[in-house]
Image (cartoon, rainbow, N blue to C red; front, side, top):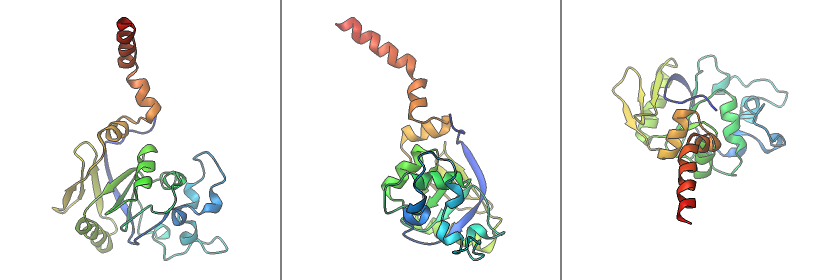
Length: 199
């Protein structure tokens, strides 16, 4: 079981760069491990650290101004390879949601499968979020999964987002695919019993 995702209120880390691919999210040299642990420290490794391993002060994740459980990224986030490790790295770094005006399909599915919520907003809403954070890094966003809305707290800016009903149910209950099957075990057993009676 994972943590349930219902409503998230948090400040955000802005990354207004388009076409961020999975090799930038988690470089290929860190893909040797097969478990989820440890990937967060290497999220955006080549952008966050110099060749000596020192944090680059101009990268948002290294700035004392920006923190929170929401990553706000530019258009076409998660393009490139299908590596699931990209979602592991983002979740491992403490993010529970990523906001962008467009996600690569495979990344979006990998994120949902790993308890990370990708929130697709309009380009206008994305621009408003970046502007609000730029003016005040303490700006908070509210993501209401049940209502499927995201808003910039303290402003009238609010927008709906789409999510597959099954994935929404899994996130809200803290389920992965196996947890979901266990949760409907009585229905599965009842169905099997009916099938036996038909034979």
